[in-house]
Length: 141
Image (cartoon, rainbow, N blue to C red; front, side, top):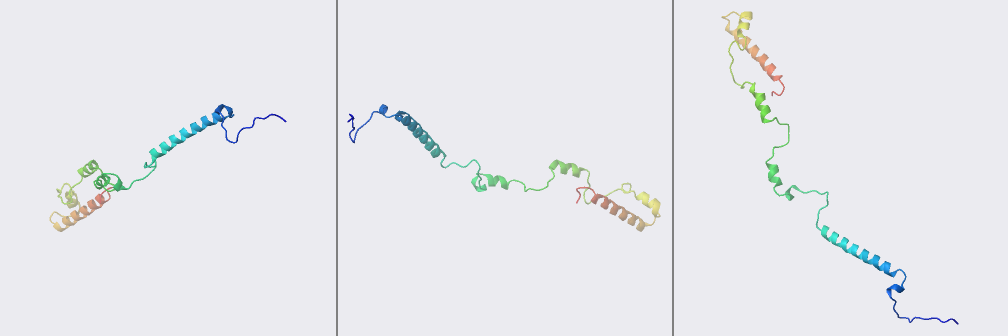
């Protein structure tokens, strides 16, 4: 019969005696270190917000006060547009001279100088025509 060395049931081996053990242990150490780093990264991320997230207005310090101070959305003219737009306009209540409303044209063409009622009517017609023309201007209410 052949001569065999039989190992005891409980025994040990040197690391070099086990084929591939040293490489496996190196790889295991690398994985363990990587897991430790990953665990540290996860721990650092706890309590952090996702890149894409939202906030309620009340969650942003001072936002509601800033919003309260803003003008509501709408179609608004600028101050300079209003100023320049109104520069060529007359007040609602104002007067004109006879030459400004061409009374002489009406008097000469339609009425005798003594017929006051006709002059008044001619003025009323002219005022109505001016009001119509003004109402047709863009932006005039």
